[in-house]
Length: 166
Image 1 (tube, helix red, strand yellow):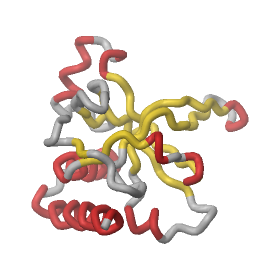
Image 2 (cartoon, rainbow, N blue to C red; image 1 turned 120 degrees about the horizontal axis):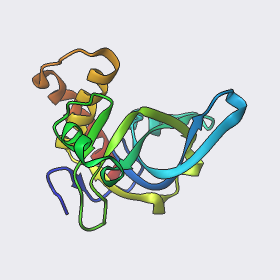
Image 3 (cartoon, rainbow, N blue to C red; image 1 turned 90 degrees about the horizontal axis):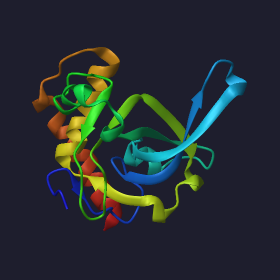
């Protein structure tokens, strides 16, 4: 296991959980021409929203793509964080997760009941969760944020996910 970025999932769905084979919706042309792609994804919804959500609430997911599907010449930009819409994810051995990236331009939401416990394979460590927070801020705002400002937010998210587990 790549302990710097991943940990085994806590007992309940949490922000930073990495899921296998979940639906992601993509509209091409007219909205009626939507496509559903089944792929890996990461939970972006905060733990308190997941715990206190109404029955009709949705879970926001970031699509995870395999880096091997990207041309070799474009891979360094992803690994080095130079493409702001693509957030690098290193591989993991057990459970297996190929080297890839979160495509921040492909965020979608699904009803919670679609996400079964068996689709959860990993959870983010504080290091990865911090990278996700910073990556989302940079992608949406183009602002550079001092990492020290994010540390308490990441710690609170990790603590909330762990509290649910206790």
